[in-house]
Image (tube, rainbow, N blue to C red; front, side, top):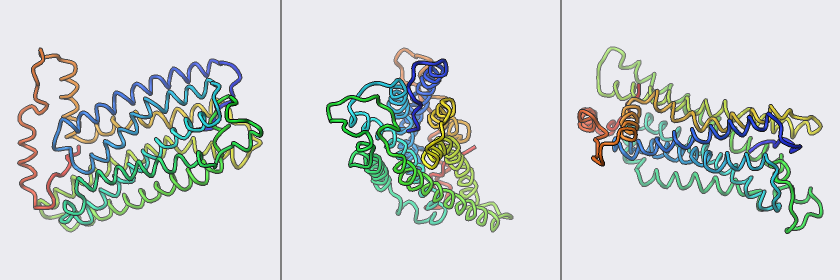
Length: 342
């Protein structure tokens, strides 16, 4: 999803771009497949928050499997029919929307967890979490496929018939007013603003609760301290998304509001690179900042590396599940199953 550089023959920067994209694709797929495996292996992680995290991981896997290969293919200047190129470009938008709506669902989930801790388990059920994930992806498909309904550059290309071929470039088929006003302002900036407000409120509520219990040691205090650690980790994921995606959208805005300017190919490639590398960063955040996730991840990796003749190794050395259940059992009803964070 980008301002495509003009195709005028292969340059060294093109070769470097393709090589880096291949490395990012591999890292994104491997890292996020491990995220899904960790959640499947450790039943203590199968709560509503990690349901949304798996949805985000699925979007990041799609970046490695679909988005990056498509972006590289489009950069090669292949010849396709108009609507084939348009559909491929829409796929890039759909997967991006899936990521940001999954992040928004995570923020809403954490907000409810600290605002209504006692009623949280009855309000946010696993079934409702699955419905929310499906809704996120349904909205992503609807918003991403809007150009297929007519908001595209079909008329700009003049007398191009349905069977005629053209050099497939993102900016050749996608209208920049759609990308800037509808996609960026409507479905990137607005959700990011909501997430910032939600996390600000989450931190305010948690710090207020901890201040009230500053002199006491209680299950509630432990609950809010763990929530604070996890909220910081998930807010970091949102921050990385914004830092990685905003440069590319800024390039799109500059191209739209200043159509006469020429964007350097290196700047375009840098923006594309940053947007894609975001998908490889999320597993690192989980691994380094969420203890329960990190412990299980190490066991999954060891199980993959060390072959034990087909014998099934326990992913929980020393009875981790029992320990987790014991810790949860000590918490008040409604404050159980707190995600452990470093």
